[in-house]
Image (tube, rainbow, N blue to C red; front, side, top):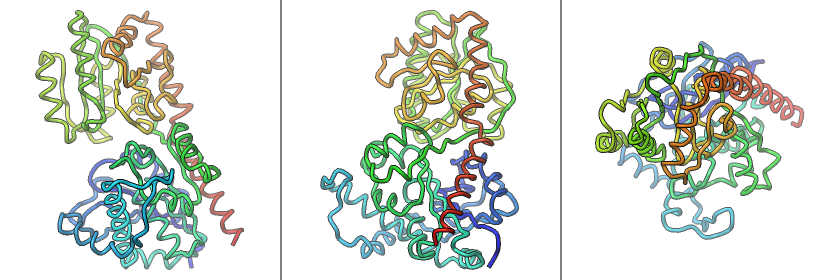
Length: 427
């Protein structure tokens, strides 16, 4: 067996398709700390091709997954025998509704399906056979399907001899943000995972409140971004608001549109640009067309992470805006902070842990009327120039203190190394 250590990283798609861009900031540090990294994308279908490069000692395990409608039906039918027929309950002991029960069945069937595909993959078996289980760490990027699969691997393949950890973000962390407002397998996952790392203190409080018996396993594990070149923020001749996200209902671009429309009606020179695409793009475009003059807005489309910062450097930016109804800790905000761009954002998830009201931007509430949100914009518009530029400098300072990827991920992998050493001594 190898004398080195193996990291088994379970993702949704990375490095295929799009999304999980923040792993790009972490993978190089993971590759430095482990002799070998195996990435298993649990939602990437066989037709997909990689869209991101990985370090030389990182190997991608491509599974033979079929998520077509017929494939999902077969998956559920095959997983029926693994549900055990027990009455599913929430953490509070309440019986689940029909939709939640159906979702719980689907969740278990999908976890079993992915687990089965991993364990019969020859490349997976060849690589893992070279390592002592005590030198293996299973790392689920989400406290969801991937974590349920990770625990199955820990139990059934490595017989509890390896370390198993998971991050937690938003839909995988907060029940209210999940499909059917319910995350199945939560107690099962938390019982067998060795450490859970929500990306915010807010996430830690949520898990401790609902699953306090596992509090000793739960520690904040902040996400971070790489240092970027400072951009020059200007408010004249037009105050330029930028937003960047997938275009989904939860991101509430309609609120941004309403805010811009209100400010325009009050005579302020303002313009808004959105970077990103998604399922609500056509709907939000139509809403903008209805409520804003064409010259006041632009949907610039999705940019690859490597092109995003070039856009910030070469286009007018006065502030960043995020009015989401739900977040973990928004990576897009961390990214603009590293460039020295102040932010106006809703108080959701861990946002207020990085946007300090009146310091590097303003925090508003999801229930605030458009007039109150606009008031924060006006306040930033009317700051004395020295105070505005100080707000830009504070964005960089707070980013360096709380969101610097190199520092955060080095600390994260140091904690994982300690956890593996403790596990090895205990066996």
